[in-house]
Length: 80
Image (cartoon, rainbow, N blue to C red; front, side, top):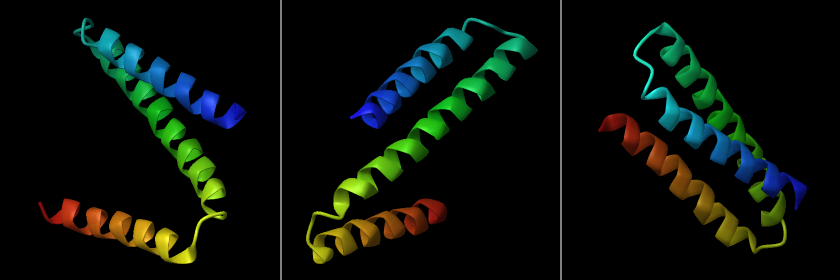
């Protein structure tokens, strides 16, 4: 539960911060955009680990289908 809230707050801060960097038209704005993008990436990592922990209670076929869909999306996304 705490990890889910951490992901929520990190993503919210990242999105609000990224929207604010659009107003800055200098190097500081770019640096802040990189910072907030990194925060969003960190939130995705924590969210992924949190979701995988919940998946252990599900049937293996369902988890395998989720993993296959993620892999196919990564491959096809790179081809586009």
